[in-house]
Length: 471
Image 1 (cartoon, rainbow, N blue to C red):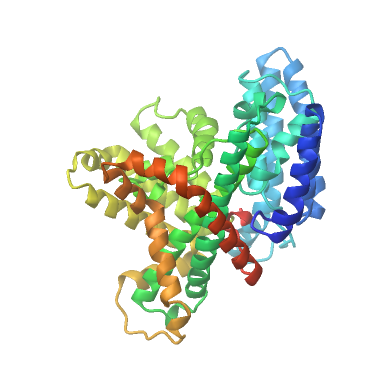
Image 2 (cartoon, rainbow, N blue to C red):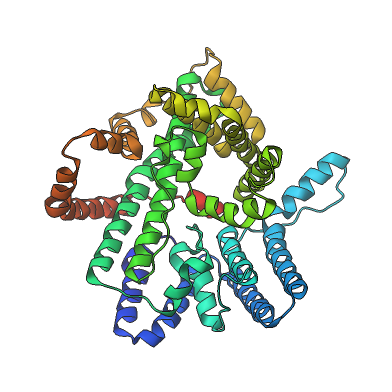
C-alpha cells in the first residue's frame, strides 16, 4: 500500500483515524501497531513474518544486553545483533549481487543465483532496529521492556517503507506519551497534502518523461534529450522522495509524533558538502552517528578523515542498491566531499560569485543522478557520453510525447519549487508579510485545490511509482 493510493486515502487512513481517536489512550499504540502491520502486509504478506522475527530477536537481545554487567559481554551481544541484522539485509539485498560477481570473476557458476524478492523497506527498518541496540549499548537510552512499543517504533507505517530513518533515542519518549492538539493535527494534514501534491502532480509527471528517455536505447538519444532526461530525473527523485517524507512527517504529526526533517531545499546548495547536509538528512545523520564517528570521524588526522569519508559514502551507495552504479554514485559523492575538505571548500567559501558555486554543485549532483538512475554502470557511462559529447543522432520517437505544453509547465514549476522560488522569496523585502498573507487567506484554498487535482490525477492514471521503495 502506498500513501498516494485510493485504498489508503479513502479506506485505510479514515478507518484508522476514526478508531484511533475514539479509543482510550492506553490502547492507541496497539491500534497503531495493528494497522501498521496491515499496511505492510498489504503488499508484503510473505515478509511480514520476517520483520516480526527481526523485532523479536532484537527485543530479546536488548533485554539481555541491559542485564549484562561487563562491557565485554555487552559488546558480544552488540556484535551478535549487528551481524544478525546485517546478515538478514545482506542475504535478501546483496546475495545475488555477490554471487553474480564471484561467478563472473571465476568464469564459472560457483554460486547459484536465487530467486530472492527484496522485502519492501528492509533497508530502512534494519537501520532503525540497529539504532535501538547501539543506543542501548552506549547507554543513551533505557531498554524498552514493552515489546509492543518496540514493534511500533520499528513498524510504524508512516516511515516504515521509505523513511525518514527514525533513531530510537529521538522517539523513545513519544512512544510513552505524546500530545495531539487541533493545531498540530491541522499542520499534519497540510504537510501531508503538500507531500501528496509533490508526489502526484510533479514527481509522477516528471517520472513519465525521465523513464521514457532512460528506457530508450541510448543509441537513439541525442544530447538535448539526454540532458532533458537527466534534469527530469533530478527533479523527480527530489519531489518523489521529499514528497514521501512530507507525507510521513505529516501523518506522524496527526498521531502526535515528531520526526526530523529529511530535506531542506538541497538544490540550492553551494557545495556537495552542503548538499549532503540538506539531502536525505536522516540517512546522513545515521551514517555520521553510527559509522563515521565510531570510525574516528575527523579526530585521527586528515588522511584518516578522508578514508572514513570514503568508507561512509561507499556504504551510502551500497545501501541504496546492490549494483555497481550505486557504489559508483556513492564513491563519486564521497570523492567530491573529500576534495572539498582538502581545499576546494575553502575556495568555494571565498568565492564572491556564488552563482558559480551553485552551477558547480548542480552539475556534480546532476551527473551523480545519472549514475544513480541508469540501468547499470555501463549504461550510465554511455548516457553521460551522450550528454557531454555532441552527436548527430535524430530521436526516432515522437518528441510531442515528452515535449508539450503540460510537461514544460511541470518542469518550470518543479524548478521553481525546488529552490528558485525560495531564493526569490528571500530576496523580497516583504517576505514575512507575503507568507503571513498566504497562511491567513490563501492556504486553505490552495490545499483544497491541490487535494482535488491529486484525486483527479490518481483516478485517471495507474502510473504511480515510488523510487525509494526498491531500496
